[in-house]
Length: 409
Image 1 (cartoon, rainbow, N blue to C red):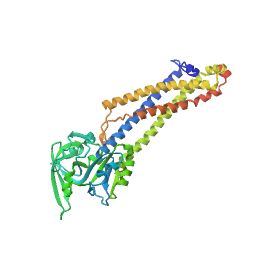
Image 2 (tube, rainbow, N blue to C red):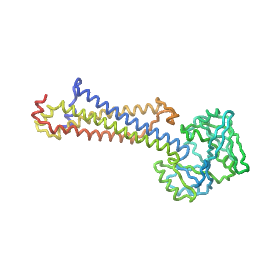
Image 3 (spheres, rainbow, N blue to C red):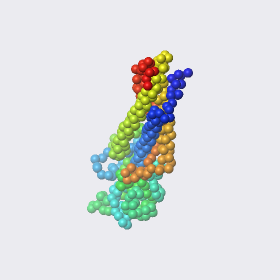
Image 4 (tube, rainbow, N blue to C red):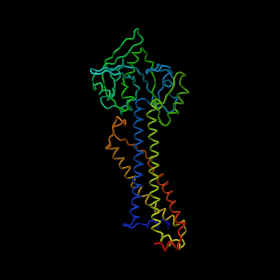
């Protein structure tokens, strides 16, 4: 029989005693602390993954473009007859590749005119991944023989231009190949409205057929402005980037989307650092509370400690009694903390009761990411750290004299 554990289970505080109140406070503090840690990790994970998914669904994980000294928004074209398309087996970790191109345009409705960037896409575009951003209407339909006369507009731009799904708008393009430059127009239909909540996309990008850009630029079907590359393992983006850099033609280079939109990823890294500080503070408070509870328990049980020592119990055995008691209290608090934290996260994930302002947070509700590995890790770290801290206040037991403690009142 484990004698210290047997005794520790019977060290229950009197319901009206001060230590009983302290025990309750310690259990509640661990419960709330662990619940807050779990919820914060789930929310930050959901927040980060939501923004990353929006960026990656719009631009891929990597973009391959041609080297150019031109600072214009439009890319220098290159042929589809390159290793990425002709020999995809040479590259490991690539899930999907899709072509794109950009061209500056003036979009005109019956009420407003706005300068935007037309992003031309083809039939290889991953519509299933993009559909999370589509809020009204449908995706554009590609024509077999010519370019599609449909576009996707951001919901924000639709409100600004006062157009809805099914309305027609005019896209104006400058043709600098003629002297003097001439204006070319296309009348297109808004097939759908998308919304990412990210200003870099919603304020600037209108999605259309790459065939339109080819027609305007007098490109053959074998030319593209760039490729968007999706990797099978997002953690291996840097590895795929090195592969592409080493094996693609000398005039092509890959760029991580996280570098292109570095302001978003730097912001998320800053939030992650703040979360670490927050978790450390909560853990410190929980450790301090448990240490205080153990000291109070030792003070209340001073006579019991003297009796145990008088009967031959060593300091190690007596210390283990109080450490086990602290672990029992901690276990109750952690159990309640998991129920509270996971329960609140489940409610938010299913009912989305806490809304957000998309203008500031890029999403309209608090997201939840179910990362069970992180949940288990937080529980293990909390248990181990507080368990180690419990040994510190029990050192006072070694200085307790049996004779003095028995007479202690």
